[in-house]
Every structure is written in C-alpha cells, then in structure tokens.
Image 1 (cartoon, one colour):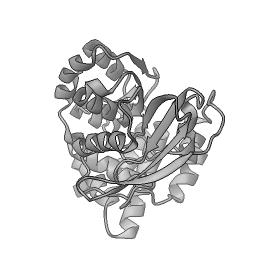
Image 2 (spheres, rainbow, N blue to C red):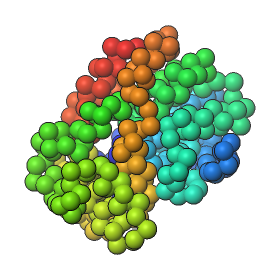
Image 3 (cartoon, rainbow, N blue to C red):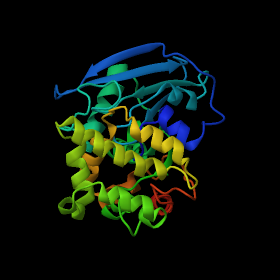
Image 4 (tube, one colour):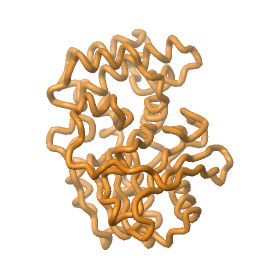
Length: 298
C-alpha cells in the first residue's frame, strides 16, 4: 500500500539498516502468464542450493528493487523476487485489466512451477505483500513452509478507507488531507478512491500527473510521523510517472478484488505454518490493529 520501495521511499523513511551486502542476480527472466496477458519479470539470486525464499512486494503495483535481495542471507537462501502484473519491469506497465488478486496468486504458483521448486521454504511480504502472501498460502498451504509478514494489510473496507478518510489518517495530518481532497473537482470529492483511481489511469497526461503529484504529497507524508516536507515536495513536483499508484488505486477502488473476512476465515488452514509478524506501532498506512487481528486468526 505504499509507493514503490525505491530511492523515493528511502529518502522519506531514512535508509534501511542491517541489510545484507549488495548482490547481483544470477538469473533474470520473463514468464508469460497463463492467460497470455502479461510478461512477468523475475530474478533469482543467492545460493542455488539454499532454502527457497520468495519476496512479495507491496502496492499493489510497487515493483521490486535490488534492495529486496538484501533482505536475505545470500549464503543461506535461494532468493526469488518478481514484479507483479503491471509493476516494475513486468509488461505491459500499469496493466489494470486481468489484474486481480486471484490472478496474482496463480502467477506465484506458475512461477514456482516454472523455476522447478517443490515448495517455498519461506515467503516474505509487507503491506500488500503480506495480503498476497496470505492469499497464496491459504490456497496452497502444502507449498509454504514458513512466513514472515510485516506491516499487515487486511483488505477490509475499513482498512482501505483508513488511508483516505478524515476519520483515519486524515486525523494526523488534517491540513495535508484537506489539500489532498481539494486537488479534486468538488463533484468528485465524495468518492476519493474512485476519483483518484480514474484520474491516475487517465489517457490525459496532464490529468494523470496532477493526480499523481497530489497522491504522492499525501501518501509519502504518511510514511513517517515526522515527514521531511522539502523532500516530499521535491518528489511531488517531479513525479517519475510510475504506474504503481494507478494499479494501487484500482485495487483499492475494487476492494482489492477479495473478501477480507473470508481471507481471515481461511487462515485456520495455515495455523501450522511458522509465521513471524512484524508491525510498527506508528504505522499510519496499515494500522497496527491489523497485525493483532491476524494473530488472533492464526
């Protein structure tokens, strides 16, 4: 649920600490999805004989970066990362057709089969990545041996609305929230999520960039309780035209194409799988209550 984990996010949050040394991917490839609609970019790095670890990025639509390889000990793990439909280096970019949770789950399974792994020894996912990890694990519990989930996002309407509501994140930055709302025409403000989803996917470049700048000013501010306003403004004034926000808002406008209560109900199927949950107390995008709720269902 956050902007792409690249230099932009690092500048707003501070550099990640305690990462493993930089490594290069030993294999890069593309996988055509079974429905023929997308070409997924993936990388494999680390120890080819190590435990197989899959990283699932957030967003939806963020894409992966070289830093995600560094979350794992390269001597202990065979590390797999991939860009979900429309994200990062997967094509077509910003793809919102045939882009639903159920398709992403199928893509993960297709990737496992393509790479010839009997199972995933570890799946790591944060924010939307944690949601996708749960969706996959509850469908294929026999193929997941361990989970590490952080910044838990449960795609209930309450959680989706929290980021874009005056009674949610808007309580913490009311002046910024007002600007976020007023960036839209008055007749579009009653449905913020739907309006931003439409504008971020507009064929009109000026409309799309204006929506992206406003979106970034709001969401980047939520990455820290003490945001660097100068950095946020610099980024918002020169957006990189990334497709992630368009994909994300399309998912949010459609309830992430899943039933959150059913996802939680299905968690009984993975109660036997070792799972570590990490969540920051001051998370303004994914409320900490999500982590506690998941803990109670496992």
